[in-house]
Length: 409
Image (cartoon, rainbow, N blue to C red; front, side, top):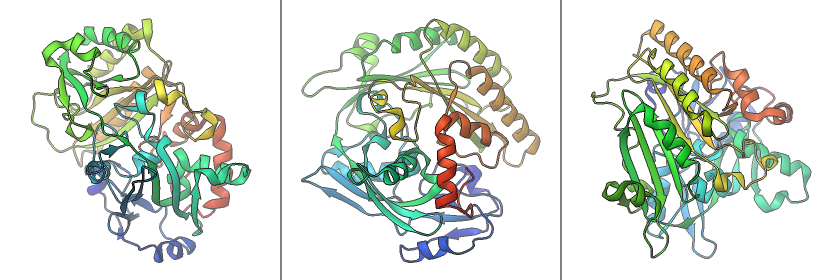
């Protein structure tokens, strides 16, 4: 579990089977919101004085359907467990930079090194099963919403805004053949970063750039190896420095080159922004970020980014609650502090806000991979994440979770 959530003084953890879950949600809950835990990265899967619903015991199904190449899963699985379960079938789907996240990764978007080629993980969802905040169970298939305006609104809301409306317990997902990957991971100077960013914006969708900035700047480029072939881009860029990995779970740990120091325990909040290409403005953006990095209040404060575009932009913006389909970059900010250091927490969150403002001109959108309903920035993040779709989501909230049992929208 995320260190901040693990250290929270929560009321306790609930492990409810499919028979009990609707009944519990249908009756008054105190206190609210009910938080949900399925993986290990969310800072908001536990909170002071709140209950956590733990999905990891009762919702662990993994069943691969050979004829359709779909996989049925329970949402108590992590992304690593999902890919490990598919390995024997030589199938996978695009995950993020870590296998630790749970189903929240899928339901809030799902971005990773293969997104430019294979699309968001969310776009692989074919069926969603769960319980609305009002205790009513649902089971909706993508094909069921065709011609049904009400069902289509529910489907769109679940794809990107599910944590505000429902507890999702099961999913059907499209899978893809496992592909080997070429990866280049190395330190660069800050001055070299704009050139990397501009260069990556010209890369084919088979390749993507990720970078992370702590004590040092790390670039992390990944290219999908074509069937029966060899990667073209990374060997040309890096020669023998490019490493071939069997699959996504074999990739090296992202961010490990950003510091020479042994990491010490810390708490953190993460804010992800979304926006267009940086192009000729890359130098000015990096200069603004350099100023902020010189002021970072804790050694574990970082600024990172991953590249989007390609297949992530081929889905209509109005078909899901992830409306930022034109996004080319997702920069994210990690605000860190020493556990128990309340002034340090305050300074770290203020620093996160300053970095966010420095990025905002080119990155006006927000990706709600982390929920911040306990922070002052939450209302603005909702507007930046959902735009003109937000009022419709709020209407659905009134209908489907009228007593605000789940995260505030």
